[in-house]
Image (cartoon, rainbow, N blue to C red; front, side):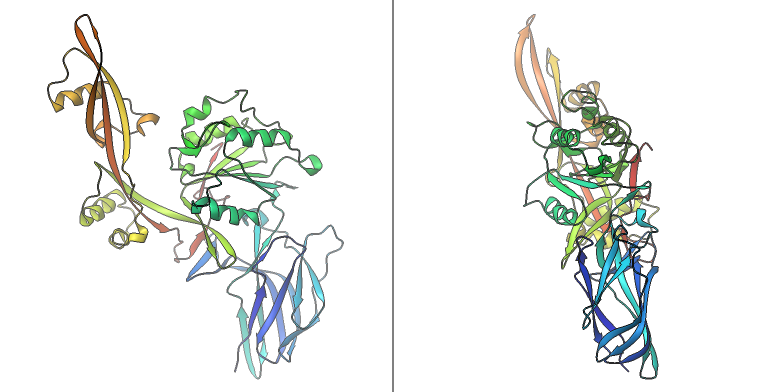
Length: 460
């Protein structure tokens, strides 16, 4: 006896004026049919299952009853239509029927939906003499107005590079095109601030969500501060140097207030509380600033773009090359002894999971030396130690974390003593493996800005 099968199109509803078409492909006939629209918390993505907030639930928000005749669903009862045009609604049409049904959007749980609803169908009924049911494995992604506090707020996204060769920016553009009310390519914070200071939203409401898409690597953020700046790795202290500066005036409260969220879409910036606090200060201190604690990516499947998190596991060695694979596995097992669930041997042996640093990281320290140059390598290291400062400029590392070479440049003679600048160059290599963030049931996790394990925030 055949089971129910149906297809939904399109895969993404860009705005609420579009209609979802429901096409039944099986069976030709069925009785006592109940068809429910459901908001899905999990769905299929390639060979994986995506899951929101660790849930596999489906919340029904509209119900039709009827029968299947000649391969088409014919409704006998339909959900109550919206009271008026001011109620946000989605539009449903069954293939073979010209009627378009207006269904009010569900009014609960929107704050955790990341700017869209995942709408699927659960259908059940009698086919011949057998009870059958079916749930669509893939939903239609429906863009909905974000609810911030009790007010509808707009979403704007700034992409900070127009480099089409960089897949992160290219795929982020495609992802946010259907999720943001505005999307702009601005390559410096000064341009972003200028826009936020000079554009008033319809109705005079402040912004709800401001996304800034730029690479991150935990301690640093790749961003140009001023018009003339090329993107560089900036630190919290560099940002604080610009707080209150005329070139970056904080937007006023009528544009950014306590219900505005500024989200830095850059890898692992949410692990750097100092960075989040500095950006919050730069924007005037009224808003919330969030950033992911994980590696962030955007990926395409058919016409659907997904935002994913990856876990990163790493260690560093002085020098410019990785240890042998067995050593790498042992180092990772020691560094992450609480993660017995991770197969580090498999990850180390998988080229697609390896994200080692190429080229190795480098750091330079210039030391002024008067008189005779150090007589040995050990003496050179003593000179370097005397000038070593552990902080932002040295990536919060120690001198012994790096392998050092040095070069001397004669500067001048003072009181018959030669003066040299000694340039020390340190190298270290990062061994890194990644795996997609999954829950305890091995479902791929959907990033959730309300989850403090997913996103760091300021104020903390």
